[in-house]
Amino acid sequence: MDYEILKIELTGDIALVTISRPKALNALNTRFFEEMAAAIKEVSEKQDVKVMIITGEGKAFVAGADIAEMVDKDQQQGTEFSKMGQKVFSSLEKMEIPVIAAINGFALGGGLELAMGCDFRIASSKAKFGQPEVNLGMIPGYAATQRLPRLVGLGDALYLLLTADMINAQEALRIGLVQKVVEPEELMDKVMEIAKTIASKGPKAIRKVKYVSRQGMLSDFDSGSSLESEEFGSLFKNEGEEGMRAFLEKRKPNW
Ligand code: DAK
Image (cartoon, rainbow, N blue to C red):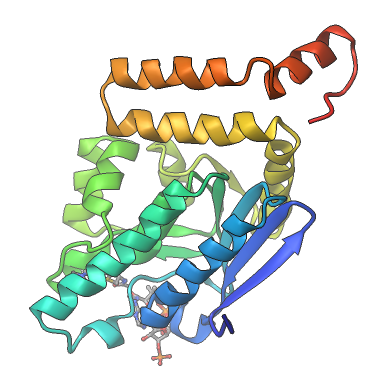
């Protein structure tokens, strides 16, 4: 696909996807969702890519769904727009490799929903977060009502969803919405460092940690634990053997 909004760069085994429509603060339109779906497919097909990073260009990560595109939609078109976004964000969760959100600025509405579809979030100290949909007489359409309570608990989620308050990075860190906050100029170096750390681990183990953890969140504890046992077992006489032998032989594993 010829990308107009996304830039995709490969650095070794790490894929960096930058959302680049800074004039509209990277607001999410139909074209974005088509490109993101294509980017997910493209990156997933590259077997040597081990981590994907998503960030935004300019002062926003993403300032929400594109209000200019949404304003004229009718009920059916609105539902379809919502389903398209939900499908793309779910496919981030379903990618085998970890996806990190590098949140450089505003992450509002659909932008925060995109960040929540990633596996974890690292924020610039200048980033701002919120679910401002009720300001527009709307509710979230890309699963914030589902992901936010699971990430931060019902009280903090409903506080954000009901007040439309914009919170800063420290507050986002306090409620567990982001995992680390760094100075703006250090953001990409830090995220790249984290991505490289992940990429250095057992590649099958990394994929299975994501898969089992995410499946577990969708099922009950016993089913999740049972899946963990199966996947744990599958690494014996496999990548796990090499990792354990390397430890005993005091050398680096050869994955
Ligand atoms: N959509 C379209 N354009 C946007 C935008 C957005 N979400 N956010 C900003 N822009 C545009 C502005 O209109 C402006 O364009 P020009 O006037 O220059 O042409 C340009 O980006 C720069 O914005 P500002 O001039 O406003 O910049 P400031 O620094 O002064 O303010 C801001 C930054 C982020 C505080 C402000 O732009 C703002 O409040 N933006 C709107 C934020 C917002 O409300 N976002 C949530 C959108 S609602 C659903 C599906 C999805 C959703 C809901 C339902 N269904 C299908 C059911 C999700 C909804 C949302 O995400």
